[in-house]
Image 1 (cartoon, rainbow, N blue to C red):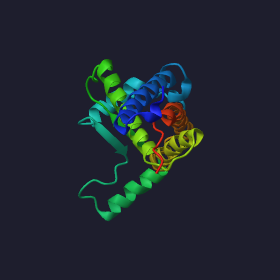
Image 2 (tube, rainbow, N blue to C red; image 1 turned 120 degrees about the vertical axis):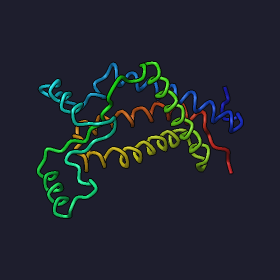
Image 3 (tube, helix red, strand yellow; image 1 turned 90 degrees about the vertical axis):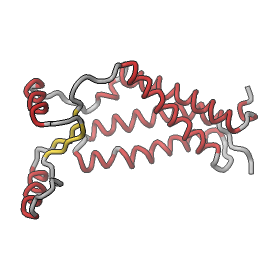
Image 4 (cartoon, rainbow, N blue to C red; image 1 turned 60 degrees about the vertical axis):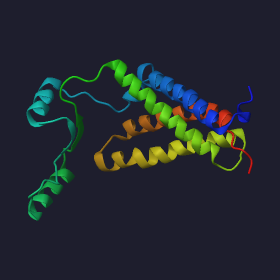
Length: 194
């Protein structure tokens, strides 16, 4: 099949679907069969006590930070004291969902749409770069993963104490997923010569 002869709109659609499926399947493998998704995760020694403390102190679902330094009405002295508590530790950065989650099928469907959108954007990027060889296009997609990882994952490691092991696992999963998708997208999204 000569996919490079397809019109750009068909290349975008094909790249989005094939790349999305590859990213989705990689996500399933990395989360269900490999230890990549759980690298650096730890269990609390008493989950029930932590759960009760969270439910008693988190009035709504959302992201919480402890010690919280941005509360309205804090004096400069109180803000400095909160900052000092943060520097001393412990620090918590946690996403809390109170109540039941959406169905597993709904969550999988949303993840698939996220993966298709990611592949669509990667395909669009490949279609708009200067003409280059197949391997260079794959490397370009991996380069995008590096940019995403550095800009999105490393700040969480730096500011919010996400462990180096956890961050490395997330980074590894991102790089492998983009590399696998890149192998297909580089065939589909060959840019037209100028």
